Image 1: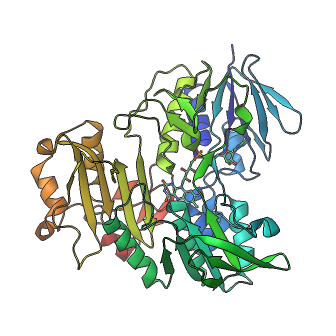
Image 2: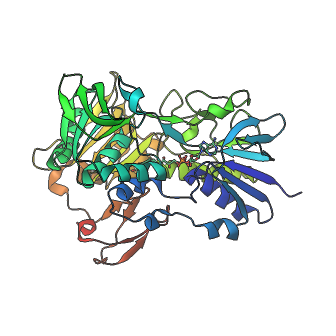
Image 3: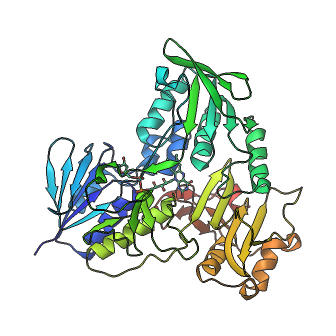
Length: 458
Ligand SMILES: Cc1cc2nc3c(=O)[nH]c(=O)nc-3n(C[C@H](O)[C@H](O)[C@H](O)COP(=O)(O)OP(=O)(O)OC[C@H]3O[C@@H](n4cnc5c(N)ncnc54)[C@H](O)[C@@H]3O)c2cc1C
């Protein structure tokens, strides 16, 4: 009998699942419901859309022909409001319902802005998550000179870069003592802060917003908790990404911060799967408690696994659960596992880092001599090998001595390996020795085509 699959969420996890289902079963019915009106796009490119470095054209991961060619019914601009798992049915905001044999929830997360005195008067504090956010910010930039941004993690840094690259004066209010404290120690933060400052971004540490100043329903400044008045016409406030799970009340699907899934991406209901930023893994080789890891490549892989398992395969997600990879002001950054332990009992190996003359920083985190975490800033050449070591619970002494020398000994920094992070999905892409400026490279994960530049060749 023809199977009927429904996917909620038209992001990378949902799209990859749909593609995988179609590859495994040419006859089944596939429906994707997404509350954004656009076909699938590459979200990490949004900062570049804001700053005008790319046109909307470059954002599309799939066009409408993809859905037609793969016989996928796309219900875009439609929101799911309820799941009735005992009836195998989902309800949409417009009153329609959809029946399913198997269901994937790939609804990602939403950025919640913090609330401050004055924000209720404006309701127009910006964050960057969707194309519509990007268009809204772009429009505001036309009549703005300066911006204030408050927040801590990489989504905050993305917004700051987008605003700065658009020619605005940007002041960054950092509530703590460093950037992205979940993964970064002070030395790593220092390197990135230096880059931000070189771009003219002013950073105020341990500072938040005391009050937003609003005139004629538009922001014209903020007063910081240090009682400093800062002019701005754009205010960005970025809190952590909150998984979109509101519609799951009474669904029978177990949630914590996100949707709890096992390593086959199955939820507590036996024909409902979840993948991507909304999924929280019950099993993790390192962490004791389930975590959500906001990462493009992870959503891609989890979508692929969920899609395969929805068609009867039995594939497990066996990646290191917490990996973050991004670029800040052109600096590549990868954190794997426990990269910034907050409790005692861990040993840190940093070789010759930090070094005053180079903007590179690498470290390994060991627990009882087993490698449980790593951080790479500015040069990520060994990150792939170290990820494998962490996944396989290797002890420090089992790691290849030549790899450790290349990683930590500055005199041996000349490596036969050349590579860079894909600007979209941040996959590490090697460049062959004979590559030349202008050669084309296609990322195998997200499919974006890139020209080799001098910077990539080092
Ligand atoms: C500005 C920015 C920069 C980023 N940079 C990086 C980076 O450098 N490196 C990296 O690894 N990751 C980066 N990310 C994160 C990465 O984009 C996400 O991890 C990835 O997009 C998650 O994919 P997903 O499919 O799980 O969710 P999403 O891409 O969020 O897709 C989920 C979709 O489901 C829709 N939806 C939600 N609720 C409903 C509902 N009830 N009904 C119907 N549809 C619904 C949402 O609107 C959305 O369209 C960045 C993200 C942003 C916003």
